[in-house]
Length: 502
Figure 1 (cartoon, one colour):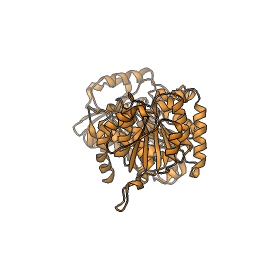
Figure 2 (cartoon, helix red, strand yellow):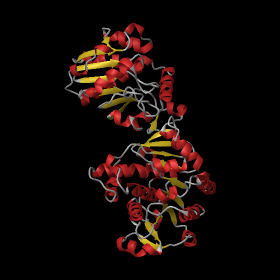
Figure 3 (spheres, helix red, strand yellow):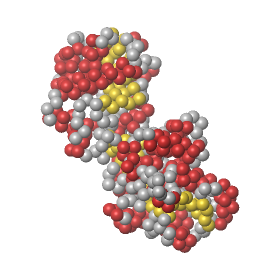
């Protein structure tokens, strides 16, 4: 479970289990402080004047303990605290007493006087908005160019939801412990964290067995064993046959983007199903991707009688209406798995329950009830299928996606800067790759093709969606600025090489 993300409550339990097993809490705090100092020496070696902002809890205790180590190593350290040491309790009181002086009130802090600020005011468990003196100080700190290293999470960010609780520190770097939290990867917390380091402080991974986390960082450890590597003696049919359904003559580009991505993504064969009106347009642009005519549900059903056609993308550029609903029903009645995107999703806006019933029937026919459909909505499309969940502002994005996946009996890939992939069984993954350049026309079509490629090769539905999202984001990172959707498939060989290299 190296990719597990822990909620604040789960992290508190990991600490408690470790302490109950014989590791003193003050030792965990000292190890956390040592990790903080190590990060400072690596990233800010020239920062001589260091301010440590200490809150009233264990996050503040980490700051006091780090200040003591920095002072011993020759840095000019000042602690600014919300409470004097005599009002602290537990391990935080021990750490504050060990520093050697009682520090200064937070009101005395002036960010411009320092080369580095260590933010230890509040950690991941904060549940109320910053206000008053603290909010004013955070505002001044954010306005100053001094770099900030936050302990656990930037003060003012919820570790559970990533939301800003009123005001929040914008950090240059963040050091957290044992496992990251959802708030490190969910926006806007993700944008507040800067670079994130997860430090080992001696908590044994076995505690995760007792905790049973359900949220994960979308990293290769989560799905790598599901990806298929071509065998020396294999052939293209071993790697599945993905299908993308095209729209009319004026709306063919989205389907071709998805098809190209599916081929680059590893599917052995890819076919575009085109209405008669668009066959010549598609034929002009397709080479390795095959092309077949398909004008109605009967033809689609006949084609899907070939069970080698095992993954289908429906929606990009297809058009909204009854034909999209008919095609979705035909796919979900077959042995193929369906990636439903864009117009395919919107076509069910008036009757989402009908789509969910089809997906449930398809899942019931599969081994262990595995999801037969992947929904890939952006926020607006999500609202069309799940208006009540979209309106639940207090719910964290992973929980929103979980509830949607359970209702739809499908994998829900809720797109955004912090894309979340959720399964009906409660698993959820928050993606860790990508750049702002992905916000460009057609990038979602490429993503749908990548999901289909992983499905065609036999990956489990949840893992296929997770792998596709990660590779999609990594391709964008490797291309860099100026990205357009057409650039993404060409970057996939480099992504696969990166994965092969570990």
